[in-house]
Image 1 (cartoon, helix red, strand yellow):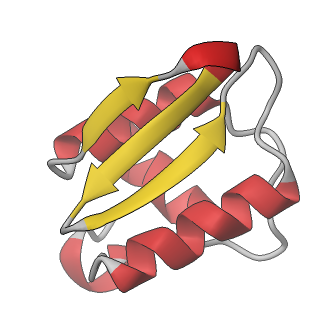
Image 2 (cartoon, helix red, strand yellow):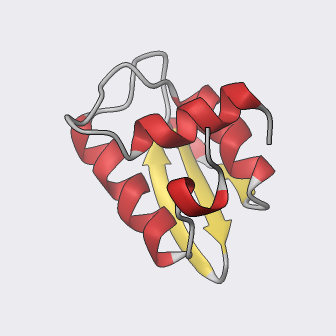
Length: 88
């Protein structure tokens, strides 16, 4: 994972919750983590990683705080720890 992707991953777990992260940035990070992405209708993106799935609404806007929180919980459940696994 390159430095830019590590920064995006760390920003997902930062406090306060950021609202300027775009889904296309997160998609590349998820692909680096080994996730399978599927694009469904109405701009939704389904993510499958470590036997777990999540659906996020994609768009031209930044992710909302609720979407960032969902991604954060999803990655934690999948065993991703950015500080331990992907230090800056």
